[in-house]
Length: 337
Ligand SMILES: Nc1ncnc2c1ncn2[C@@H]1O[C@H](COP(=O)(O)OP(=O)(O)OP(=O)(O)O)[C@@H](O)[C@H]1O
Image 1 (cartoon, rainbow, N blue to C red):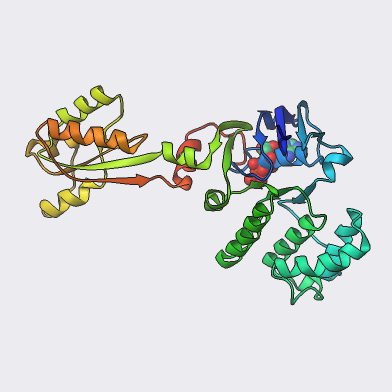
Image 2 (image 1 turned 30 degrees about the vertical axis):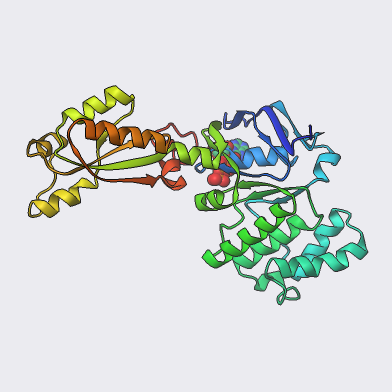
């Protein structure tokens, strides 16, 4: 069995103020893109800094391609775009990338070819000879990406790689990352841009308050969150209770029905499911379901109760909503305190 690209066992960093991250155990396979999400101060950068060998863990272990983190062997496998970067303003972009190549001991002959190719790849081909002080924030971020790739690393750690980019720049960076993934590189992406994770990553973890709340494949996590809507005619409140008993799910009136109700009742607000139901109105019910089969079963149950089913639709919760819902209301040790 091949060695995972990244493996951590109860990896913990506790700063003197008690913050950091704790008991992080994850495995990232070779060639996988892994998204690491969390609110400000959750501990994402702390984990990445441990993995790239910038800070020492308080406890736990981790390995990159089987090499202990912090070792030269592990470091030689990685590229790293930090969240906070500052490049030498007096140098040209080309010189900055060359400097990183020298630091990584890339052979001169390789550097001569790779640097212009990388600058082209990150969209700085025309500006490589300009000094960094004339670069916009977005250009500096692209420059950082070129530096992170200069040693042709197997694992690329990116801490908010698109934070300074406009939507077109983000798409371009995503294209670059997709190509890297196609070439079998492993990508570890810290991001607040949830869409970025959704579009690029195979698996993800959600970190809050220094601990992993959930992790799994992005599609699994999203599928679990699928909300289904049933437009039911002749509704009575009993239906919700009965469906909940029969299915063990949580059926409720959807906010969508307000539109239906307003349309039918000259702009009145929908008071509640109870009053709505007295006249046998058409209502939207909603519940989170696991599968289409389950939806089919529920259709049959509704019809069995003598009600009319006008429409069934599903509304997949976006990762952003999922993220907000999952971390909201939880205790934050981070910057929001
Ligand atoms: N050197 C340090 N000393 C003490 N506390 C620190 C140190 N570095 C980070 N912290 C604290 O540890 C917690 C986690 O910080 P970290 O930077 O890892 O979070 P993050 O999830 O990357 O946040 P952001 O998205 O804002 O970058 C925060 O509460 C932060 O204030």
